[in-house]
Every structure is written in C-alpha cells, then in structure tokens.
Amino acid sequence: MVNKSPSVLSVLNNIKDDTVNKKKNQKYLLQYLKSHTQTNKHQTPIEQQYYRSHLNLITILISLFLLISITIGVYHIFRYFILKNMSKKSKQIILPTTNIINEKLTLLKSLNRKNKTNYTNVNFS
Image 1 (cartoon, rainbow, N blue to C red):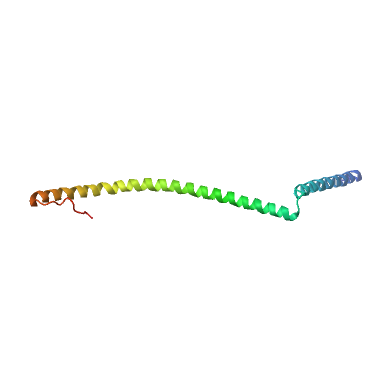
Image 2: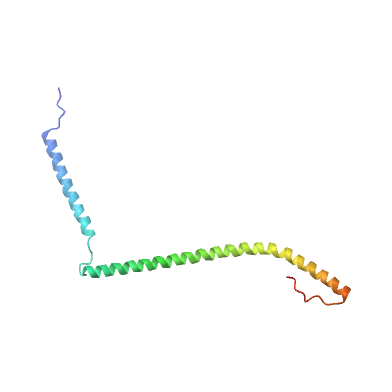
C-alpha cells in the first residue's frame, strides 16, 4: 500500500507559508490603517472638526448650486417646448377666429351701407 499522507517537510513548509502570509496581511492592514488616520497632525481635534464642517458646508453649497442650475436649465427647455407647442395650437385657433372676425366685419360693412350708420367701433367680445 502506498502512503498518501503528506510528508513532514511539506506540512512544515505549509505552516511557514501561512505565517509569512499572515505577516504580509498584517503589514498591509497596518498600511491601510495608517493611510486612513488623520493626515494633518498639526491640528487639534476641534480644528479638524471645524475644517470638516467647512468642507461639508462647501460641498452642500456646490451641490445646491448644481441642482439649481440643472433645474433652471430643465425649466427653460420645457418652457421652450411648451411655448413652441402653444404657438402651434394658437395658430390653429387664430385662423378660425380671424375668419369669423372677417365675416362679422363684412356683415357690419353691409349693414353700414344699408343703414348709413357707422358700426366699425363695435366690440366683438
């Protein structure tokens, strides 16, 4: 029978590799933690908090400015399309009403000729 169990040397090598990997992981973890600690060590915690609050305020103001700019842009685009659409509808409405007004004017002119009175200053509303 062949013994398929790992040799003692291979087990020791695996243990050694594991410890090396753990040390590397610890090294990377320490580097990560150092990179995320406070960067400016010359300021007190209160000054750092004050600085962060100013950064937050500036970020909020920039966000509001962008939001308002986008809103105004969208408003102008919609207004342009609505006015364009309304002008098309108003042309459709104006044409029949001008025909009606012209008919009323011709009727009034004919009445004016018959009665010899002036009806041209009459309101059509």
